[in-house]
Image: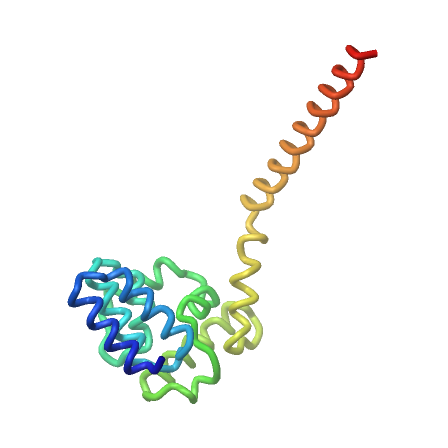
Length: 170
C-alpha cells in the first residue's frame, strides 16, 4: 500500500470517528517512511485531536511551523537528548530530510546529544542507549534484586514443603 493510499484511508478513518485506527495507520507509516515529513505532520495533528501535546510535539519536532508549547512538553518528557533522538524515530543521515528546517533540527539534536554524551553520536546510536537506559537505573537494579530474592524465598518454601511432604510419607 502506498503512502498516498494509506493517507486516504487515514482521512476516511478520521471522518468516521476512528481516530485510534487513523493514529495506528500513521504510526505504521512513520515507521516505514521516517523521512516523510507530511506523515509526521499528520500524525501530530491526530495527536492534537486528543490534546496530547507531548506526542504532538514529538511528531511535529521537525516541522517548520511547530507549536513551541508542544515542543517544550515533548522536551520536558524526554530530557535526555539521546532519548529525544530515539523518540523522534529518525533513520538515516540528516541530509535525507526534505527541508532545511528539518535538517537543522536533526543536526542540532544530534550535536546536543553528542555534547551530553561526551562523544560523537550518530543517528542509530540512540537506539542502543534507549534500550539500556532502564537497566542502568538504580531503581531498576533494586527491583531486579528484589524479584530475585522473592524467587529464592519461594523456591526455598517449595523445597521445605516437598521435604515435609516426603517426611510424612516415610
